[in-house]
Amino acid sequence: MDKNAIYEEKFRLRVSDFNCHDCLLPQAVLDLAQDVAGKHADILHIGFEDFIKQNRIWVLMRNRFVMEKYPPLYATVNVKTWPREKGRADFDRDTIIEDLNGNVLCKIQSKWVILDVVKRCIILPRNFEYPIKEICEEKTFETPFFKLEDFDCENLPFHEIETEYCDLDHNRHINNIQYAKYIMNSIVLEENERIHTFEIDYVHELSFGQKVKVYYERKENIIRVKGVSNQTNFIAVLEIEKK
Image 1 (cartoon, helix red, strand yellow):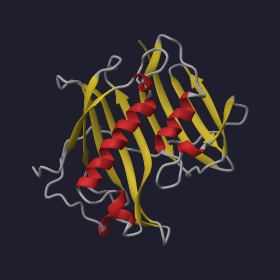
Image 2 (spheres, rainbow, N blue to C red):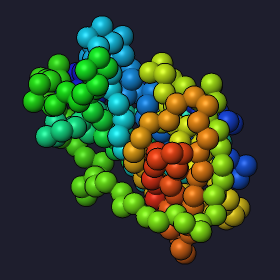
Image 3 (cartoon, rainbow, N blue to C red):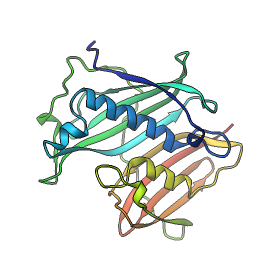
């Protein structure tokens, strides 16, 4: 196996990574995955600085994760990431968060495309090769990564937010972890509840100063969420479990 096929790093979780019930927040999970993905891309010379010179950027299309076990406050975790075999139109990346004994805490999968920022078109995988001799074949999920089904949000309750300057990343659009924050500020979980699975589609990007209505609907342990400005910006599905 190529030594660069997998990247891993240890992180000490901070109090700001947890909610008021000491459960790890979805935005913290996605932040860890984003951090290691970016560092791995930099090592492979396909990160932001290398890509922007070619008028290219990575654009995140979809995220999902399942919490196998919640870590305690201030725990140190090991985060591992690797790219999957190229798809026909996009690129999948897997990430695992483990405790220091190697027990899996969270499994994460993300779906990306490469965008030409000048031509504003997607660069197909057939026109790109990972600079890795051998791709890791391990999978976090065996089930396919399908687009989430849209739903009618008329008459549903909503929480309105406005995107802020500090929500922007270096691509000058709202960073993916902020969408999770918008969702978690729109739904209220009981003290004995926590998220088991989280899945989100980034439908249309958000920029600074946009007002967004975050609609939500709960049926038993499933919560569906949709963010809408002048168009649908994101759709998410969360599965809730009891502690």
